[in-house]
Image (tube, rainbow, N blue to C red; front, side):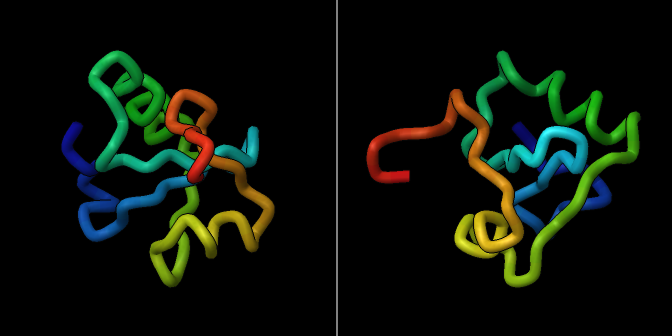
Length: 71
């Protein structure tokens, strides 16, 4: 999926409501609606630096469909 306009320079976008972070670059088309809904609800957050480690440092966990043993 393409990155949202507000986050064109961010790979990881979090949902403040559920403390879930999405890797937008790896998010499949079947889950694209989640990002659109997140943008409409305006409950998103980005991280600096834009890394999964920083998202985890702030208490966010990777979206379940994107988790692997290595993540």
